[in-house]
Structures are given as structure tokens and as C-alpha cells.
Length: 316
Image (cartoon, rainbow, N blue to C red):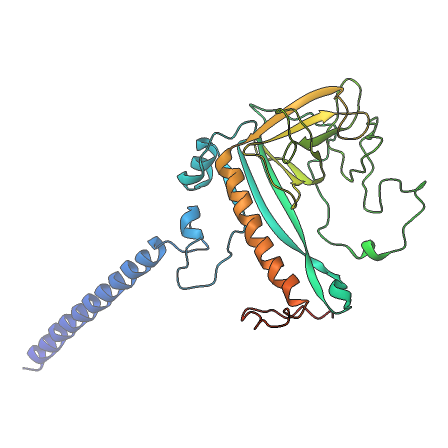
């Protein structure tokens, strides 16, 4: 009798254990399924698709402030949206943005405390060097000027000692700087004459495609960041109207931006759609600036003013 009870007890325990294992297994499978679903759900931080990264998904994310243009190959490689694929020439991609400097421009309207941020208009050019090689003069793979440095506020040094500015980096051995321009980074040169190669554009100039409106300072570069892609960041300039298509050139010149080049290298053509997006972004910025400037002065007598009057930033 006792043996039968023991056998029944053991049998019941086995059934209970099986039930517990089934419950645990089912719960584990549900948790695994839920975990897999969470992992497969696109998130801003982990997605390889630009559209998902730039879509609010219920959590904080970094918002891209660039406007883009690129080739289909670049879009496929980096998961970029097809809507910005255009006939850009000479580069695989370009990205334009407006950045606020960390310091301010003050003294507007005769008031020491009327201040606004200093704006910089920049463009990144992505070169596929298997198709459009650059005339590198430096073995240094990457150089970037600081967006801001306290050195800016130091007393200017003797021009004989630092003729190209406090932040200027010495050119590679044997490279001759442009005699007029004061580029702080000198990564490109004509391999024959060893003259510095500079970027110019026809962004606002009248005339043919070879017209020049001015030089574009190099902010920095990274060579072969994703072989064979190299990126060069330039000062684009914020003022003035733009041509429908903007050409950018890399030429070796003895002095200035407007003389005939000693040697010609890269030629970039920014298409109309991209240039229009640049102009739209600049207009938004000008509209914001206009509100600031209007806020400096009282509305004319007999008017009620505007409801969106903004007080100037107070200098810290």
C-alpha cells in the first residue's frame, strides 16, 4: 500500500514537473519572440536606413541639419533616400548646412547687449577617388580645423612669424602656398610646380561656367574614410544669390582666386535641385535674422507693431 502511494506521489510529481516545464518553456518562447520582435523593430539609433534614423520613433534622436545630393551608388551604400539622387558630377555626394558658432556678434542697434550667433555655411564634398582622384600633397590622413578656439581672442602675432594666421598649419614639405590667400590647411598641390591647389566656385558670378566668384576655405578633410571615398569640408558662404547650377573647381594658382590656373584638377557640378534646397535653407535663416533685426527698433509711430517681435539675445 505504501509502495503504491509512493508510486502515485512520484507520478504526480512528474506530471507537475512536466506542467511547470511546459509553462516555463511557453513563457520563455513568448519572451524570446517578444525580444526578437523588439530587435527587429527599427529604432533611430540602430537602423541602417536614413529615413528611419530621421523619423521620430517615440524617443530622442539626432536631427540631420544637412541638405543632400548624391549618386545612386552612394545612396545604396549608405541607405540614403532615393529622392535626393541627382546628376551631381565630380563627387559621389555633397551635403550643405548652416552652423551657429559658439560665439556671438554684438553691438547691433547701438546696444552692447544686442547679440546674435555667427553663422557659417559649409559644404562637405565626398570624392570617389577611383573615379575622381584628388591631387594630395600631404601624407596626413585627416586634418580638421577647430570650429572654435580660445586662440581667436589672443593678440594677433607678428605677421612675419605667422603670415597665414594663428591657427594655420604648416604646408607639407616643398609645397608653395598661394601668395594672396591665407588657407590654414594645405592638403592639395600641383605635383609638377608644387603650388598649392585651392577651391573656387562660380556660386554667384555672372558669365560662363568658368567664372569665379571667390575662393572656398578648407575646413578639414579625411582621406579614404571609406575606401575609396574621401571627404573635404569647405566654407560655402552664406550671402548673395546663387546660380541655378554651381560649379566648384580645384586649381593650382600662384596668387588669389581670380587669376588663370597653373594646373586644373577636379571639377564639381552641383545640380539645380540641390542648389534650390540650399537657397530654401538660406531663406529660412534670413527670415529668422530679419525677425532679430526688426526687434532692435521700435515700430514706426501709428503702428501696432508685430506679435512675433523677438527680444535680442543678451550678451553673457
